[in-house]
Figure 1: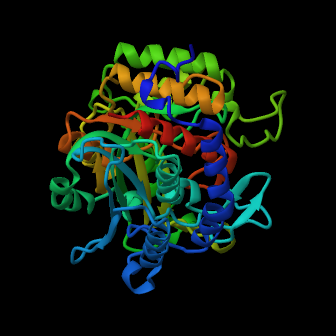
Figure 2: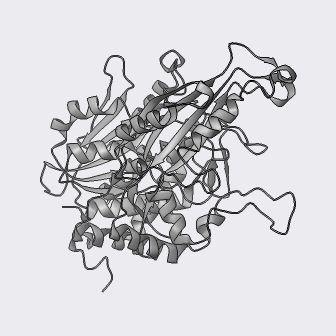
Length: 489
């Protein structure tokens, strides 16, 4: 008996036909739709303050709206909901089939807003220039997370073509996830009464450890983003005159950052930014490490070393278990932007008056984001070196998420779906990124099971240059989601 045979609800499902339907849907409709979607610079409001005037987010929502309507799903209701002063959401409601209860709901989530361009795209590629080659669709946003609404409808319609019973499905597609989903709580409050009894949330906005099996996200880190400003002068002065007298604003900033993490190891120091790692997550990290091995660090585009016996820059450690825990359950600080530093071409012998650094602090899943932001501000601002003018203004903070324990029915479904669609069991892995939606959903629907999964596998490079969607993997994931829907009762 296969894992699939052990779940009676799947007995009516012809998986060969399911694969054919999903694959055809992707080739004939979804890939062409995503090619057009990549062309839209629908940057999240944090990166495009004039998003309303530019209209790209509205264009992405309208494209998705037309696609959903074109699927002709019986009983479908669809709305673009706009609350004054907030980004829009797309909300669809599809009744249950096969006599299943009307109020037992699966909520499907995705987003249509994008990260900014980023530099470093290889020749012939660009953030808004879709290129489809070798099964990969290059360009910003298709994998993170434009594909979600298209895949969700493909999964639902593939089941309906076979008249396989499935639960009541609602979809919530937002447009400010990359800015921290700050508009989402208002929409959740407004829409939750219309969703019924949410038994399962499927969020298609996460990663995959490889392209060989279905990956289930067990945790997400939190985040604090903010700007550290260090000012020592009212204007720049000759470095020959001021050198040795005026402290360097960059050096002061470097000293302040050493209060947060060790500049030699990157280990974050303060207990305010750490938590105990649950034993189950350590066990899952070991299992994932057995699957992924050295791929945990080899997946990144390491720069070649300029000299010495080692060919490439080295990771923080090569122990795959420690790497998994480092990127999922431990804090990490990154400097992601800077002001006050002229380009090399225009740099003169001038002692600069100020340095501004944009900081991104990833937090363990159980650390409270707002409290961490306050602690970070205190650490950076108190007693500054040389009495420099120092401020840390955080513009966003988010608490991470730790998945509730999966019930046996969901674990069995995930294994059956992965075995059927990929030939391997489902694998479990925390992710280092942040999806604020999951914490919000956990509060709104505390009894719901959570399936967080996605297509961001090795080298897919979300948020960076050369981002791509691995279409063959996405097809299988769509079929796997359809199986999960068919088995949910």
